[in-house]
Amino acid sequence: MRRRVSPRSAPSAAARHLSANRAELVRELAEWLRVPSVAGAPEHEIDVLRSVNWLRGTLSEIGFPTVEMWSANAVHAEWCAAPGAPTVLVYSHHDVRAAKDGTWEQTAAFEPVLREGRLYGRGASDAKGQVLAHLWGLRTHLAVTGRAAPAVTVKVLVEGEEETGSASLSDLLDEHGVTADLVVFSDTLLWHAEHPAVCLGLRGLVLAQIEVYGPRTDIHSGAVSGPAPNSAVALAGLLARLHDDKGRITLPGFYDDVTEPTEQTRAELAALPYSDEDWLERSHTRSIGGEEGFTVLERLWARPAAEVISLESGTDTGPSRGAIPAVATATISIRTAAGQRAEKVAEQVRRWVADALDDRVDHQLTVGSPTDQEPYRTPRDHPAVAALAEAMEAGFGRPVGRMGNAGGGPAELLARKTGAPVIFFGTGLPEDNWHDGDESVSIDVLLAGAATLAELWPRLALLDESTK
Image 1 (cartoon, helix red, strand yellow):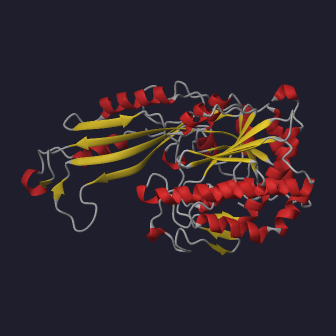
Image 2 (tube, rainbow, N blue to C red):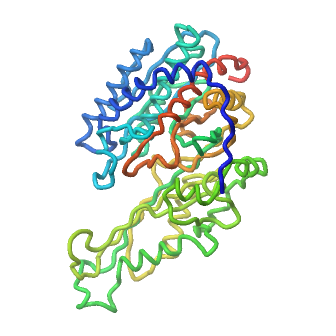
Image 3 (cartoon, rainbow, N blue to C red):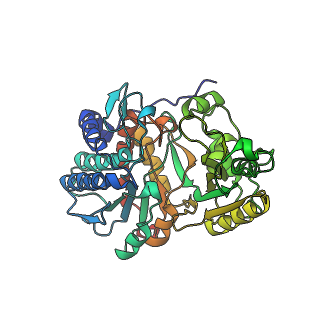
């Protein structure tokens, strides 16, 4: 199926300014990507601090009069030079996932390289590239308007624990009493480089870790095979019951609170250009599954999902020891949809494991934690949504659609703590290989994203006081 590509409009002043500074943007991002700010790794604590200091210096160079380090991994900056204008909090993160050298073919993870319009390196898309789009968006906003300060009051909060669950974020927000009229959340994907769309929400996240215990020790299979309990088989049997034959999740009462997508939402998602071939190519997946009765985009953005993201038992390296494993472990990632709450889903997981696991084995289940995330939906009639759509159309030079985000993030937490609605804007794409080898970012998309943000600030400044 051939993709429909809308014709581009003439580049805006912001887009032209960024095009002229393309090489400098790439140089700056590459410099930051060389800092291996890996989340949750003690040996990289100093690198996280170096990443913090890189960002602090850059924010100061742009002109932020107040730049502070909040904890050892978070940066906060504030530029209040627009009395009466809305206060906008920009949220993102600079920590990155660990990298396996054997999965990187274009370059080593922290040795960025530019090839065919893409900059390769860990964090290029998730999410240092997204932060950089904001930095260059502000620079461009000032350059093309001739202003000495942004048209709105801008606060920036870039944390260094997002990849491990943002454990300290709630306390940081409370400690510093962060407030805003609007939050711009930048840790999301776009649907397609040629078909930009406004993201109107993301799913929540509940993680469950289960350990299943069979024999009291790893034991020679020839000695006890047959009557002995097998932890791997019991765990595999449990996981095989996670979905029914229609792709629905089997946790008791799981769908009771799920908000069904509206006809408007389904029509908006159907309007996005889609083909199975394009999706399979860009997502690096072999086939399409999921819940019957919903399209692929509805399954991604409007319905819950449950995936096994780690599974381990028996001999993990070297020749087999020929033993029945004493322990088998798995991690289940549950992406919750609108209407669901993490605490209730955690209880559903506990009931499901108790009912479905073979009673010949023992187990330990860990589910429900402060780092669980709730789903969030932007109020679609908020004027900032229209402002963002206009800014994206100017920045990308194309009409924009509507979409969601398949992943999670602390958007609901930010909305609850600041008292402000959240809008989403990211520059990632499904083909950017987040959390995998050869992560990369399209420089063209990064430039269009920065142009979008440059166009956004003056539009937000025009929002009526009553809508803030």
